Amino acid sequence: MSEAKHLAESLVKLLTDPQGGWFTPASVALEGLGAVDAAKVPGQGFNSVWSVVNHMTYWQEYLLHRLRGEKEHSWGQTSKGSWQTLRQPYLEHEWIADRESLFATNKVLAAVVDSFSDEELTQPYAEDRAERYLVIQGIIAHNCYHTNEIISIRHMLGFWLKKT
Image (cartoon, rainbow, N blue to C red; front, side, top):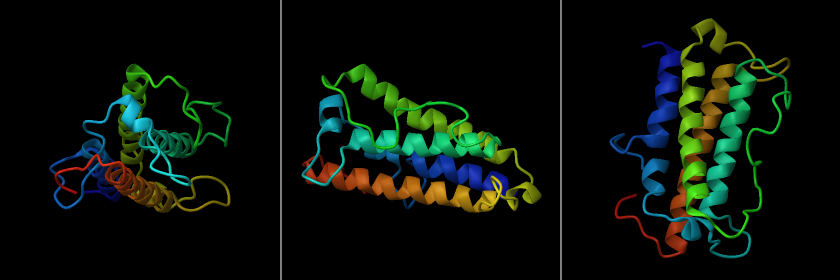
């Protein structure tokens, strides 16, 4: 398997695959949460699950555009921002759309990653920036970190998962 295919598979599997083995993916961590519960903040200084989902989507979109060679912010505002304030009332269809956007963006990003040759992976994603493979590994780590944040927020709010 090529390194690009391996990274692309990891991007999707660690975010969505409940059969991935050792890691609880975001898809499982988000199960059973409605809009109102996803918008709850467990205390001062914490985020809501919904805000974390939008933050994860934002950075995947950012990396997607950068890996496509687009200059920073040349693509316009494609998401709601990295850490935006949620609007009330908390509508179920908006929560579902934001959740689906996280996974759809992840799949598009994985397809772009899968298209790279091994040589392209070692090139910077932009002038004077890190190599592509490093920022791809970074977004995988970012997604995993925030998936665990989602699990922690759920637990603080009393929305326990059976298995984590």
